Image (cartoon, rainbow over all chains, first blue to last red; front, side):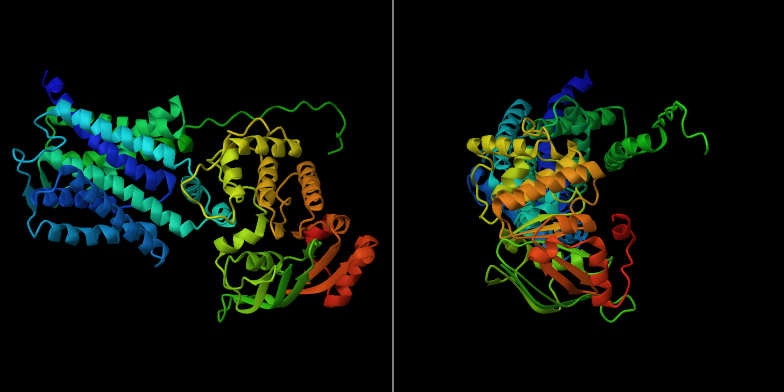
Amino acid sequence: MAFLNVLPGAIAEGLIWGLMAIGVYISYKILDIADLSVDGSICTGACVCVVMLAAGNPIWLCMLASVIAGALAGVLTGLFHTALGIPAILAGILTQLILYSVNLSILGGKSLIAIDIRSTNLIMHMSDNPMAIVSAGLIIVATIIGLWLFFYTETGLTIKSTGDNPHMSRAQGVNVDLNKVIGLAISNGIVALAGSLLAQYKGSANINDGRGAIVIGLAAIFIGLSVSLKIKPNFVCSLIGVIGGGIVYYIIYNFVILLGLKTDYLKMLSAIIVALFIAVPYLKTKYFTKQKPIPIVQNNGGDEDA
Amino acid sequence: MLKIKNLQKTFNPGTVNAKTALAGLNLTLNNGDFVTVIGGNGAGKSTMLNAISGVWKPDYGTIEIDGVDVTNMPEYKRAKFLGRVFQDPMMGTAPDMEIAENLGIARRRGTKRRLRWGIRKAERQEYKELLATLELGLENRLSSKVGLLSGGQRQAVTLLMATLNRPKLLLLDEHTAALDPKTAAKVLEITNKIVTENNLTTLMITHNMHDAIEYGNRLIMMHEGKVIVDVSGEEKKKLTISQLLELFEKASGSEFANDKVMLSK
């Protein structure tokens, strides 16, 4: 019974993190870059949204500002990587660190700013889970349709090919560096959008929001793709799977809390889920693949002199 | 069409691993030349193609394609002049994307990519007809992922991609070397057909002396980063493998030591 009570909240939060995981999907799966700047850009999204709201701006403008701020963070990581030759992982870590300072200054040096939920028109809040689920659902549908269309355009196709085979892309006249920057901007823009939803849902922005976000995003991707790739391995199905992965992740998360696990261990739990999803297929092929028996060749006479 | 002047490139300069790959290479191709390139390991054949493609900048010298100095042009920009097929069948295509998507990207080589549809409907029909000319049964697999194709099929698709937008210069870097003999012969036959039908200016590296003599209207042999033999026209048509080896020994002052080439006699 207690589990059913937390279910709506788990779904709402799962949707928000699923949206965030779609951003991670673009860098990790499409561009083939493990972009760690998302830990910072989700928090940037939350901070920008909350501060803009406090200044009395309409909610759509606050969310738009969050997306732009996130996209700029992606551009920064992209330039670190392509223009300055910093390895992608390190480029992401550097941006993440820069964003920590940036986020603190956005929050005016405070570690937490709350939204006055009575005087502002939010599109979601944890006090009304059905409403939050509908709002998050609509934004996710719009995002998936937008991405689906985008990746069929000339630019979109070359961003896919950039991650798939940079050699081929360059040989076909694709500016691989520019495409990585664009891809990371889109990825972090979506992550920051999820951050703005998270801030509204929780009613506050905290400087520690988003720590370990990349791991939750990857967990949602692995959980989701493990199912959706078996059903239909196409782009839209994968994205829907990723959203589903986010929801499943939060259901597991809440279930584990109900079982009495101390919340201190939850980050460790996320990391273990990701490690398992990567390790199990690897170990399976390494240790549990049966060698096919060597076919017995019938010798039909002939080369007997050997 | 192509003018290479005094091209020089040393890898790892100033170290014990320093290797001079191009030592003042000069080469001029006329419009429509189909040139086969042979030479031992480390002769600088692939290095020459990489220099033309702009994989890195040469230490010295200039490269001109169709009257444009491309020496300092980045790789992706000079791609508009070039069609390239690599030795490794995995390198020329995006495996996780459909055949049609690969062709659609190649079709737009040299144009600015915008937010327009990546493949228009009429193109699909065109690609279908082009794939049919390969006679590999790919015409009904436009939506298949390229990663599902065999090495030979991938090389054929790469060849199609390289020539879809008529290149000023087609660069083939031992593009049949990784294929089994039967498939290699088939891909070579397709290559010859596409090159001669479209009268493409082509540089084809091969390790097979027989192929080098049979195909093209001109043959160059490279040694230690330079062109040492250059025959064309009637003289090339009458060439035999033993004559070729003789030419090499005379020009380089050493014996042609390359197992791959010797074995493929």
